[in-house]
Length: 306
Image (cartoon, rainbow, N blue to C red; front, side, top):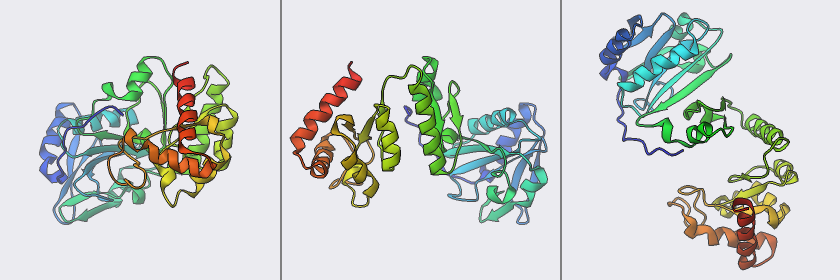
């Protein structure tokens, strides 16, 4: 998204708990310790929010700021999250909450594992009603990231799914979602809406979904971006799409540095690998790789340099 973060450091909340408590108190919050059965401590803020370890996965890699947002507005919780982030060097500070729960629900879901203590978020019920979530990465500057740059320029920016939790999007619309089918459907609806307005074309980046969804985008005159996934043995859906889609609406992509094609899968990707993608597409279409390269190059020129 445009930022190369500083190198983070994993540790339990106990290493920073006094500093976090003082930072929050200096900002005017009411903060108290909660002591677990093993003597480990977490923080309770304004009697509606906990600051603790992430005990669900990768202990030491994140601090969780978990709130009952009926009792503490999410915007206020975000301020708490930013303060925690300002004095922490773990990779992520995850700030989230939901409605229909209160502090006691959070405390009832506390778990302790080794050096770590925190709220088991699914067990607390925060995911069940009007879930809000923002991931705050270490050393990440939103001002140099794509959503902020595009948003400031006046272009509409939508982030759907997990990326809506992870990337700051102050000038656009973020829609946290979990179900992949729902994300794909909502994305299609948004693109249709803007194609009816003044959106004149575009690329569906690294397309890898069904023929039915592809057909909807192709009907709107959009291009499908095809990359290294096409060379993977298990890429059945994408191979079906590649066979169905007209070559005049396909462009070749790398998704650098990810998704390197076979035989370089797992290595850093670059445009040097595009001939492998062209060859895979040529085999599916029953034409030469040179024909694929010629047509997709013209497609890119028409779209990007018109």
